[in-house]
Amino acid sequence: MTDDTLTALLSPIADIIRAHPAGLSEVQLLRILREQHPQAPMSGRHEDSLSLFRSHFLLFHSLYLLQQQLADNRQGRLEIAPLKIVLTDLQPPGAHLAEADPLRNYYLDLDNLEHTSGADVDKMLEAFWRKYLGSDKRREALAILGLEDPVDDATIKKRYRKLAMEHHPDRGGDTLQLQAIHDAIRVLLG
Image (tube, rainbow, N blue to C red; front, side, top):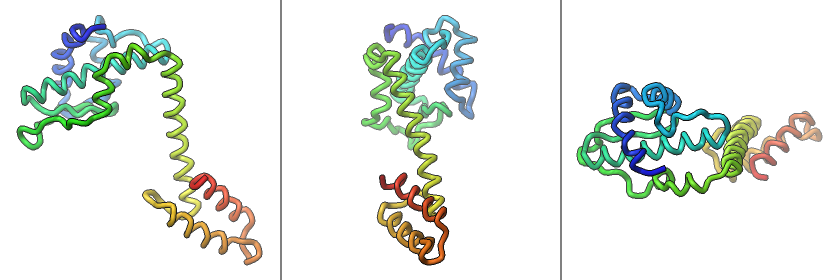
């Protein structure tokens, strides 16, 4: 895979994005690209997590190349996220891309694509789901304590002590509620 192959797709990708001024998702963009340019390297079948990752990577690599091209030519700012890809005016006029963007740097380095195996993709997906499900557990634990993010550890500990005393069976509290409070603090503070 060469940058030349992907560079040839920048104009068609830009045309698709311009045809959707409100923006479109990665999935929508891939679907349209597959319909209009079935030869595009990211238009292949997604039979496993690795082929899906490769399509995603190649699309985002192309999007970041396009973002740079548009900024260099002062033709707009391409905002890139999986759920919304949209072309906006440069804000403020003459603004340039942020120098340090680790995500852009990751996708612009084709070595990251070449050196990512199916096992690597599976590990990334596993880490994502662990973090995603962990955030649900955190929200649930905070709700038990009557708190919401953002909240610091000191506030969590203070609230825990108050509720533990309030719900302690020796003070007329409920054992099940106290257990839920103990479980919540373990989720939140380990």
